[in-house]
Image (cartoon, rainbow, N blue to C red; front, side, top):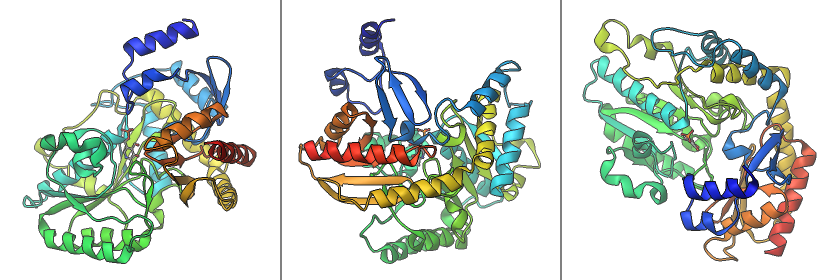
Length: 423
Ligand SMILES: Cc1ncc(COP(=O)(O)O)c(C=O)c1O
């Protein structure tokens, strides 16, 4: 297909996620043709620095030779085989490596972050039921959390803009207050803890999007809020799920975001960067204590699975990515890059009302200088200067892949500054 044919066929046949139809049709699409490291190239040969890590996914970069080779080698063996009732080498090796790295004991695979969260909720609920705690029917989440777009994940999450229309379809979860930057963390933690205590032994599980509530506009909190809330869930006998689909795998400079918290979540959801975006891959990590609750009797089976659960090709990519954390010192580089980012952000950005950052996750709240769609319009202008960003309303999200070089990050910030100066 020529460029024009691709564009015409896209407009005719493709339904884009989170994309307003008229707005999409109003301007020519960026058609990605190839990529390398932190740079994407479009069908006309123009290059773009990937400032959102291809939607918070990129860790080691596009076309990494080690991951390429692992996927190619696996292609010569088997691309797909089920994990229902049989097993395969890459799924086993990745599970063992993930448990070794994180201290968890069991890995339940799926193919997207939403599914990883659904699985965690269902596992936790069923575990409680099977140990005789049948009164524990309530699920708690944090206000403003985003756990994905499937109905269970939406029920526990709390973003009205995306999900209010589906309310009649959702189950009734408890939504606990969760602070953003300037709010009183201790006061909101105390309110959340009181709600958890009130729910008491009716609460089955609490799900948190720890430290950075990404899709809500990068609302950030600290352990001063998170710690007492997670601890309160354990005090009343509920399980804790950490949804680390966005914050895990190095984006906060550590492998798991919750590895620094005193309260250890019972379940951790990973997705996005797990395969560096090569293939759809997500995982729900669990402790042996949970796994043991599913023994003894066919009726206690976890009757959940997806066609692509444990797909060998995806797991081979995941394993290669995990190896890179060791061989390339990914976390050490992420820390250096994060420090560099902090230095760059000390320079004031035109039209920025506030800038916040944890690790390699940055939010820039803009004055609405171009009206309610300022964020979108700034991103379109930035694109013309060779940088890719995505807005959440009038908040610009900057989330470079962990592999980005300091020089590339400096270039990106300079291009963003000149874009903002001219709007
Ligand atoms: C914290 C969090 N949880 C879950 C999801 C859903 O992941 P997916 O889009 O792979 O279903 C996302 C996606 O952005 C996320 O940020």
